[in-house]
Length: 351
Image (cartoon, rainbow, N blue to C red):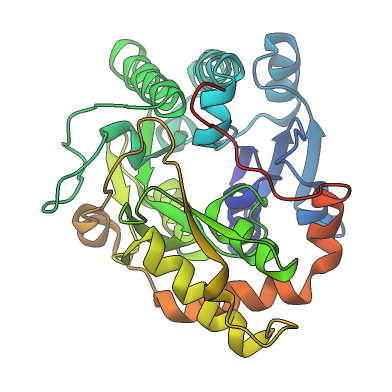
């Protein structure tokens, strides 16, 4: 299958690129290589004849039309997005442009491509839109999000992703485009840009800096190892039903404070602090970010039942492997933080 994969130089996108190539698909990555699109995450794939890359902006209709015309994809995996909640608080406009307008541009070109197909090729075509559980808002102490959860986005990032989800469903309902939507929980693993919680804490710890945790640290997230997520997305492209939504989670709920303490335990074993103190002694509680959702959790029952998918990487195993990857791959992350005096917090109140 020829798959056009947007955002393939990103964290989840690069993992999905590897997974699809391992399954024998041809993959063309479309990526603008913004700050979180990292070419080094794909360097090792350049010798694979089934892989190709094009540098372009999904919100540029001329460029996107040219890519579709040249590659003639049999499926689209749409992962390109601005994703960091804190950045969306500081500057919402780019989130609307990329996540909403960019999705509309891709949908228009995918629709034109699909309409030109016939027979089995038309039946097999899929547009997979990769979204987030943050579109559903915040949970209380009980319950989990599912495919039928009502939308209640609370941040500019979540609102932009909710808007793009609605566009995808509209193109499916109005025009018949065979679309699939996934809503995933928090991902973690190798090659995640050092602004998200886990890599930020790892790199701050390595630099001997404080480890700032928002609020009282009780906000809960369901953690999903990125390679498990990539397998789920590949399964959707290969066997997912048009019009379906699939919720994907790791069934690994942790509060932010529990997570940071677990990271510190791994670091104490793998890279003890120079002063002999536990890394956990550098945890500090800081002012909460605006609109911080209290809890996310995913019921992944549908994808287990329909596609036979299940998370394979247990959380503690995945976390330890993630820490080791960052310890072993300083050449990947050091250029990303070069010159920074500290890994600064974004999205502060009043910013």
